[in-house]
Length: 388
Image 1 (cartoon, one colour):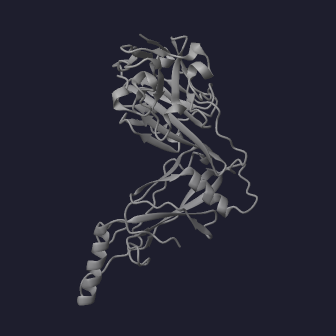
Image 2 (spheres, rainbow, N blue to C red):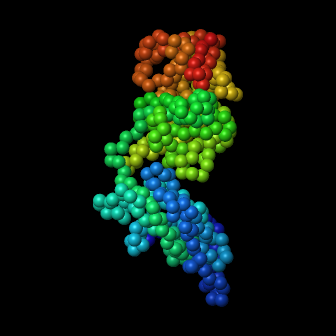
Image 3 (spheres, rainbow, N blue to C red):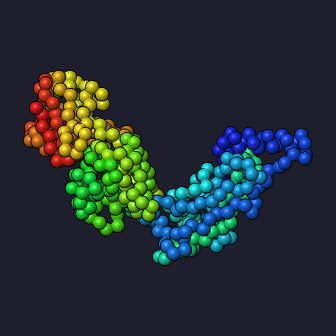
């Protein structure tokens, strides 16, 4: 049986106190183990809906703390599942709240463990779930309680694809200006140079704006909403949340403004894992035109416009030479997200080797000549810019 970890000094202190009191005086109260009071609720969605694990992010459960004699101990919960209520297997993640969101992938892996070498997942199967509670890391029997078993009658499991690959493209659609607010228009992300499965874009999203991402530029079942990605990182305090409570609800932004969206995909046990980052709209000047600075210097950061129609404006250049520009992404080298202005007017994102500079390696029409006093202006809504 899984060993549960104590998660709070308060709970441990309470256990120690009760143990000491019991040793000093046998008439002192002892811990009520909570047996018979630990109830796992039957999910409302379980009876009439198929839990499609491949296309879900979480399996949600709820319970209430066992009655430990009225004492609110810090409690840890573990999950066990079974296909027959005889053989049980425990899931690796434990929880410290009574609202439990089990990763769908973790739930599926446990079913695979129980199903033998050649499972048949062509139709939904019943799966039984129960919880184990504990408040003591050193004595499993202390505060241990086992919940009732709940039947999830229609769980559609799946066998991971051994040949899964990260997507080659990424798009988004929704209520934002770059797509005209048209949910049939898919705006393409830029690939991070030499990082397969990594994509980014700079976009203005109004307060309350909603969107989905998709490795394809069409509707058809591969699109991802808030509850369909594996990890969400709101590094810009955008107020990223779900637009509803269904399993495929849109992303929704509470705080309108400019953001860099960074999507990282990778393969984990035959599945494409999506990691979503909402980041600040940071753009910088690099290189000879700023006097030779080749890192993310706050002195060379672009000003961000107040609305979707404005220009990002660089500081005035201080030297002659080719202008180099890049967006900042979490954990990514600047040259992997570099951009330039083709013919001095159209934003062009790097997706090739620039060993020396744009003029030499790509052509003069891709190079931005810089002179002291000039500034670079970028409009990410229209994908245009200028240096003057």
